[in-house]
Length: 142
Image (cartoon, rainbow, N blue to C red; front, side):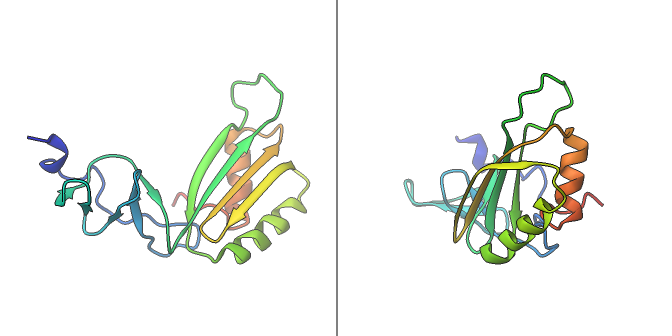
């Protein structure tokens, strides 16, 4: 038997994206998760999801990565998030955050359901994620 069909979710609570609204979760291989279960089209079975997940339509998957050149152990490296904002609204918030002049954008790629931002910054993980939260780009940790 497949153990992934027998175990409950580690955290069945819905993911709260940067806007604070509930978000649709998806398996890593692209199946929507509903009530902790997904329809595996390969086996044509309903399975309980226990593994990793990602955001997806109608949410926007967001990924931030730092290309900064410091060797500091606390330097921000990367963070993934989910936003239920429309991609254009999310990008407006990115522009507002950039006015703080705490990072330089090396690359920004956006589609209707994904935003990838590569930055250069010397901020720590704590400081950079706080900057993102302060501008509504990450959910607050409260």
